[in-house]
Amino acid sequence: MSHTPTVQPLASPMMLMDTAWGFTRTQVLESGVELDIFTQIGRGHTNSKSLAQAIGASERGVRILLNALVGLRVLEKVGGQYQLTEGARIFLCKDSPAYMGEWLLHVNQLMPAWEHLTEVVRTGVPPKKVEGDGDRGEFFSKLVAGLFTMNAPGAQAAAKAMVGQRSGLRILDIGAGSGVWGIAFAQRDPLARVTLADYPKVLAVATQFVAQHGLANRFEYLAGNFREVDFGREQYDIAILGHICHSEGARNTQTLFQRIRRALKPGGRLLIAEFLVDEERRTETFPLLFAVNMLVNTEEGDTFSMSEMRTWLGEAGFKTVEMLEAPAPSPLIVATTGD
Image (cartoon, rainbow, N blue to C red; front, side):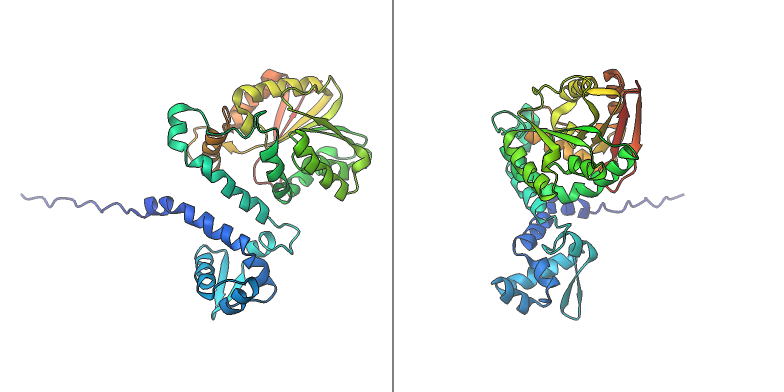
């Protein structure tokens, strides 16, 4: 009796090709932002000839770039006319209050470090640290303004949930960046006093945002490396860590939780925004890739699971740890002292 051999289908290389060419997606999107293509389409320059004239570029170059953006589902094309998708209209037009173009351009600043990934995997040492004293906040001072619109909805939702009917709260925003989290809480509680802790160069950016929101008389500043700045004891009702733990790494995050616990009043709460990996580190692609970003840019940075965060918060003396639903790019965690 003869047997027909089973023929296994050939594995497709497309997954590898898509991944290897992933850099092209980033560059196409960033070039669209740099050329202000999305704003100009929103203003009526919807064909390649008109758009090329508006931005002073070659029609061939504009046509090819526009078609690539259509292929990426960032733009739509109907009858030779290019239209904004809803996401492009909201996040990529300078006329929009939710414009994220500055943040997207920041991604390109990370590429030099990624070029050293193989060597960093071998040595564990990044080519340049972005969180160290040698930088003194220079890197983050250029980054945080572009992150304001991304984090604002989550910050506002957190403030609504955590302030409630209370007033006169004392709030500590650690690694405050643009001040987006503290600003949201100050807007929700008109009697709140907010302290922002960060490097002086970063706080110079934060003070501009605080002034723009008419809140300057209710904000104070702790300038310096927040690993070293004294937070005091039992001074604050709420402390905030808005995307800080991943650059700190496990050891520094645990120390930071302990210091924050001492700085909170009895019953005080800690709000954490963070990119969380799944427990087995298998399925949450962005947090897993972001851990690689921490590898090439910091000495100890990483991304963590919810169980790791719960353990460290418990060891620091927090009694309850809960997830807070919010329109944010990462989960929000609220830990309470319970005293």
